[in-house]
Image (cartoon, rainbow, N blue to C red; front, top):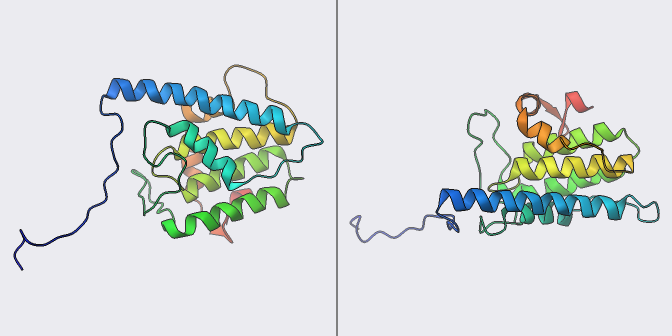
Length: 191
């Protein structure tokens, strides 16, 4: 069989926005929509009569808000393997993502009495370790971490420089955590 008659498929992500300026503008709008979603959820879940339980659907909603109109995979777990440029960490295979996300949610729900910072840090680390999406992992992890922290505290944190913004400005500590060894899926720094 010659090379011209060979057939094979090569998965490509559909480029929904090709103009870089238009993409940046859509990302900014989506960032605001994702933040608005976080605030709405905080306001809903901080009422004592509504006990919060972290669900995979919450994570998918936050991701969809971040990537709507930008990625064909907005609000969808990644369908294949992924590499993190500049990192030695290799995220788990795609088929493991749903179960690992469920385990992360179970950990948060089963340990809700732990310190708010512990739960928030755990979610930030675990989301980035799993790297469940094709794109938007950091944005979604920061939004989810802030959501968990505020709900666990029972109020929205004051200030205009939010925790997700602070983390986005200094990612080095998160990258260091990703490099730590794990025991039973938990980094030793969070145990």
